[in-house]
Image (tube, rainbow, N blue to C red; front, side):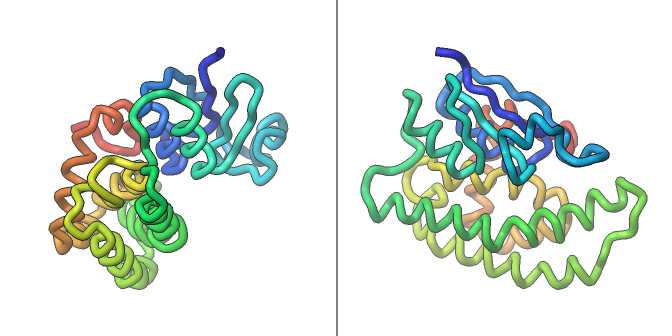
Length: 216
């Protein structure tokens, strides 16, 4: 059996989500860098792996897959190691609910509207779009409040143990907290702040550090 291959870019939130699942499961794998923003668009051979030209894509023993949620679920179910999804239907539904919140409502305001505008825009010689940041803040606040409410008294986003929900959230928060607005949002949610401190210390986060994150 060959090692899985992940195709994408180390800076990508969704590539890192898949990498975190592989590392947490203890699965040896390769990351093949793909530049989907290259002049002329994604490489033609990559479009055969992902017809929508997004990242990541995945291959394991000839089995090809794309979409991070599908990849992480496959990794959890196909390889030995600690389970990243609870067995009970209600508990698994909480994991899927958190992932859906992150994908549908949190990723855009926290990453594109806050992190990219406040942090990346100046690094690239562009003034931040203050209106975009301001509009994102209440939407981001709603997301954080919803995630924290679902935690109840749990140390992790969807229950007493680490799950795919936490791995889905961690790369998003890793970028959000690089902006002062992201840090301020997190500071207002004590349970989420403790969650972030807990997951940020995991070896898997260090092993998958984004090249856009400053070295500590």
